[in-house]
Amino acid sequence: MRRVVRKTVTGGVMLAAGGVPGAASPPGPPIDPTVEGMMTPAGIDATAPRLGWKLVAARPDARNLKACAWQVLVASTLGDFARDEGGLWDSGRVESAETIWIPYTGRPPGSRRRCHWKVRVWGRSAPDVPSPWSVPSSWVMGVVRPEDWTAKRIGAHPATRV
Image 1 (cartoon, rainbow, N blue to C red):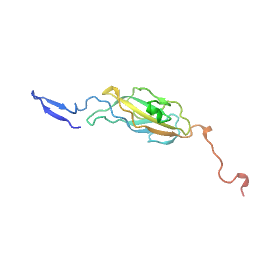
Image 2 (spheres, rainbow, N blue to C red):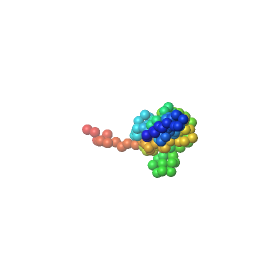
Image 3 (cartoon, rainbow, N blue to C red):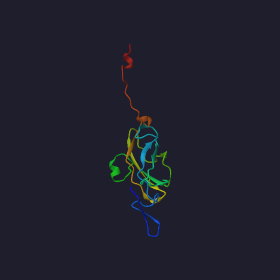
Image 4 (tube, helix red, strand yellow):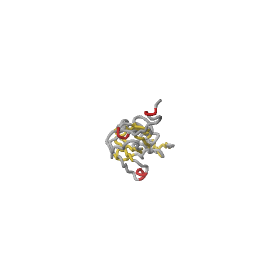
């Protein structure tokens, strides 16, 4: 973005086509979503996986970017996201500046289930304007209940050993 600086008749400086550097603006969409510190992991055995993301400025001249709230949607299908619905969890707006180790508190997803999620944040400099949603990410649950373990013996039957 190019800023045009012009001197006014009174000798002051006017900024045009760029505004005031560091002025209030909402953050950009969160980036680098993680689950248990990993990007798109498979085999998560935590029943309440912890989510995280990084903040990014919407404008290159923004300074001192801090969140004041966030909202997470978790769904079992990407179709829910088209309607901005979280079939498994919609945190609603949560007043917090935290961006790491946010515990999932939605419906238990169950063993081997893929969970899609996205997040948006509100910045302290523009607390009434949410960022765009992050790019959807996902994680796959591992086997979380003992009764979900199933196996069949491979190899020779014990009675046929020589």
